[in-house]
Amino acid sequence: MSLARTGIAVRLLAIAALAALTAGCFQPMYAEHADGTPGLREKLLTVDLPPVAKANASREARIGVAIRNALAFKLYGNAVGAPPLYKLDLRFSSSRSDLIVDPNTGLPTTENFGVDAQYNLIEIATNKSVMTGTTFSHLSYDIPGSYQRFSRARAYRDAEDRAAQEIADHIQTRLAAFFYAGT
Image (cartoon, rainbow, N blue to C red; front, side):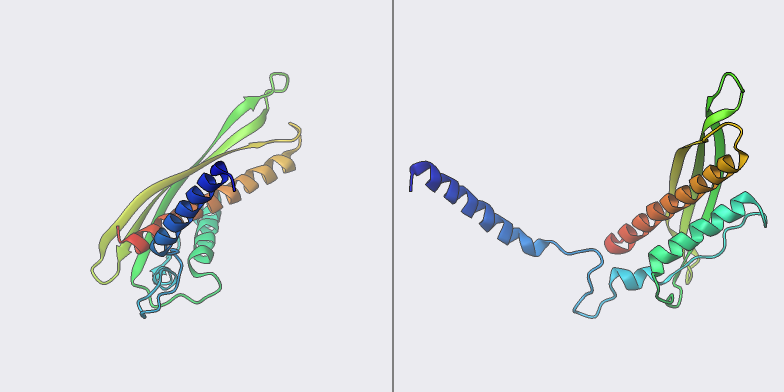
C-alpha cells in the first residue's frame, strides 16, 4: 500500500471513530422514550384546537376550518386526542392583491393571496399563555385566461388551501419545538 493510500485510510478511520462517538448524542424528536416519560407525540395529543372565530359562511371561516383540520391531522394523525392540557387560540387575517394586470383588458393575470396568523398556546389548568407566535403564508397564483371566471375562482381557492397547509405546518413545527425543548 502506498503512503498516500495509508494517509487516506487513517483519515477515514478517524472520521468513522468521531462519528461513532457522536452517534449517541442524536435523538429523533418523535422517538418514543423507553423510560416511560411521554414522548412528543403524546404531548401534541394534549393540545385542544377550538374552532376559529370567524363569521359563518365566509371565506375566512372556510380558511379557518382548513387550517384547523390540517393542524388537527398534523398533531393527532388518525389518533384520538388525549384529555386536553393546552388550548391553541388562533387568529388570522387574509389578503388578496393583483400582481400583474393585462394592459389590454385591465383584468389581473396573476394575483397574490396571503394569510397572517397569530397563535397562543394556553395552559388550561392555569389559563396562562405558555407560548405565542406569528406566522404567514403569501402565495401567488396565475389566472389562465382573463375571461375565465371559474379558473380564477378555482386558483383562488387552491391558494387558500395551500396557505392553510403552510400555516398549519409552521404552527405544528413550532409546537413540536416547544414541547421537545420546553421553550
